[in-house]
Image 1: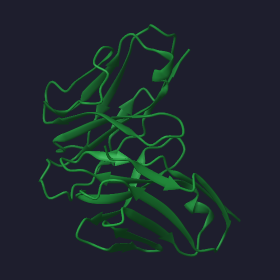
Image 2: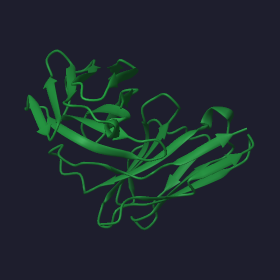
Image 3: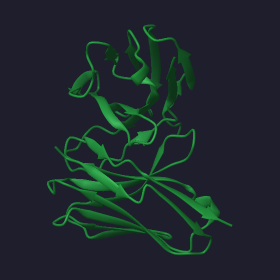
Image 4: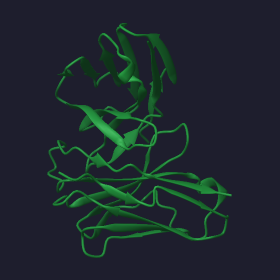
Length: 117
Length: 111
């Protein structure tokens, strides 16, 4: 089966500019996640969708970050305006609908590497 | 707040050696713990998932153990190969699929 697709793979912008990332999850996966991975650190969950509803966005800096998953399939993550500290890899992951049994594996895309100058 | 720590941050060993990577977490109220592999420029690949009720899981040359009461997990790699070189991340599932990751161990296997 096709994996999680992300684009672009790389993006370089100036601070205060805006940027958007796109993710297409594995077909049939109801749950979609966006993570931020700063160099040398583990991924940090930014937002989790179940279909087109938000399950958890407690760590999303809402003053500058936004995300949507309008039709319950693909998703976009936007940063506006970008800051230097937003330089990171942005990973998208998906899984089957949460069963509550804690057995669902998350499948990760290749990520988008963002550099803010 | 759950904190996950991995030691060492980097490890370099000769090919053929057995090795152990360590992961510790502060809150034992977890659903499961996963070990992931991350190759440069690529996403994460799930290696092993241990449910909170389990003690260990095995896949090929990999064995992961979980001691929930002490907040520790280890990933054992037998007969290491150069292709095992990657960053290894552990993550605890706090429920509702919320994963909290450690910072990773960068492993280099020297031919």
